Length: 384
Image (cartoon, rainbow, N blue to C red):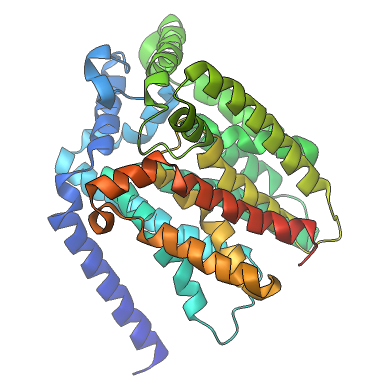
């Protein structure tokens, strides 16, 4: 059988497995998608998006995000779920495709190394599919921005900035955590990207006025800010919140102490990233390392970093595995142990009691902080 025939057979197998997963498991759930689907319907009707009576399942994204679900809200729910499932699945494959393209390959005769990152992060991508979340699409957009900037740098050509800026503005309009790129773009003096990105953000702010009018648009944005500020504190100590503020809340139990320590940590991380970015300008493709660290920081720095948002660490994990031979032997063994902890920290495997204790200790947060250290090592030591 030829290579093309094997590829076609593998593609058919993947499609069939994905279809079976949707029909027999995912279709019954996708609770987060249904919240967003309802927001699309409310947007079309000019109704408020943020309602107290929705409880935990209140729409939490900016008003512009509703535009993403507006065309899907025209479809029956079953069909809309199938379309969104396909979008999330395609985004998940693209994340690894772009990650492997972004990182200069050193895999050689070890193809299993390409399989390891998806296996380690499989639980987060499966959870993303199960809930019908938006993070895979967001990570895909931010990776496209990174790829455009890296390609521009490698070819020493211009012209990618406007498209990269529009994609960054789109991602930021859908979910504000994409603004984490802002300090880096300032530091790198990417004025074209910043200007086109903020122009798109301005458009994203204005567009809901088409359904709400100008005064109604201002009101719905106020409702979003109010909803976010009121719902966030109660979720900081949630078991599945793997962010740094979640770690601090679980360990201290005091909101005031948590917020103070969190702000200090964020400042420390910002200074650390600044130092890492400025360190060793002779490093080959420094932007690959930089963007891997920034994407890894998103679930850790975001106040509501649910465990499935850790899928944004895919480029960093690809980079680490790709550069495994550059670490001392002890740290390679330690990395293997850490990856095993991440891979096998599954509810069905550990059981309710052990898993709850595991998450209450924020072990996963610590594991990914360790991975961030592995990426930082490559940057500081000029290993590439």
